[in-house]
Length: 403
Ligand SMILES: NC(=O)c1ccc[n+]([C@@H]2O[C@H](COP(=O)([O-])OP(=O)(O)OC[C@H]3O[C@@H](n4cnc5c(N)ncnc54)[C@H](O)[C@@H]3O)[C@@H](O)[C@H]2O)c1
Ligand SMILES: [Zn+2]
Image (tube, rainbow, N blue to C red; front, top):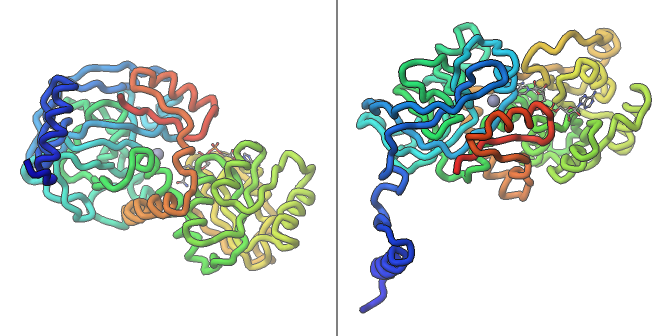
């Protein structure tokens, strides 16, 4: 027989079926996952402080505007860590996990496109977004005025009859009207990193409003946890190369260099702010920074960073997602007389979310080691251990990855 692509596929299918002793669907039909939707889903419910139980719930009817997603993985966020330790939103019992992604296995007849207008079909890979609904400029700040649960933030919803409300699970039901994005063109690790990356896309957008960031700007990134490291990556994808990373952890500083920092300064090696700011200046060849990103939750670090910035320079403070206490600065020396352009940054907008998908492709294209940010991967059943590893700060990004 003539070997065109269709019968090559048929022969391969036949051979594979005989090897695996099972039927493989023809290409163009629904993906494997959609063919075997189980009756029940497993959901990691935080049932008490520092304790998850894996609960089994029936998979509910998928309404005309709903999307059933088979979860592939979900990163553990600082917010999950706060919930795990203290339940500040008073949500227990709660299905946590908002940095999740998976494959659509079933959707209602009214679902045609994602929140950006991109077509959606069974088999597509999707993420949800903390910022909800169809106002692209709504920010977390606006959401906070409502209650978190009312905002369709999957992974922070109060428990209900459906239960499939968080991404620490094997199935999640995304209800009509929620923000959902088709990210089929990103690999699993990139999709897990979308949410924290959106924080930095937003921070850099905030920084750009000062008009100071340019290709050849000298930029300090203080704090090289996941947030600072991703900050360096976003700057690199913008073409900014003159970056000095500051931290006290040498391993993280070494990673910052691989992520694109030109030089690094270990603050543990310097006594006093004079010596430290001198080291930053030396790293820039005798200049202070044009712009600085503050990516630690340390008030002392906030106070220090002004000393690294030149007169007329800029600062983006993004290190305090939650209240970390007061910092002491000298308003005359640090701000007024230096004419510092200061911006704060908190979470992101829906628009930043969409920008983040492109950022991740650019980061990969220029060879940044983004995937290495995910240092630990745990199966769903080991979610308690995963959270403890996160709290012990043993790695960078800890993720639940389903089998
Ligand atoms: N703006 C937002 O929307 C937003 C979103 C997420 C996280 N955050 C905040 O960003 C901060 C960083 O997050 P992360 O996940 O990277 O945290 P992390 O704790 O993993 O990293 C912080 C890093 O700062 C370093 N550090 C501490 N004190 C320092 C100092 N004095 N000088 C220099 N480096 C110092 C630590 O060694 C560590 O590597 C957190 O405080 C978090 O609350 C903000
Ligand atoms: Zn998060």
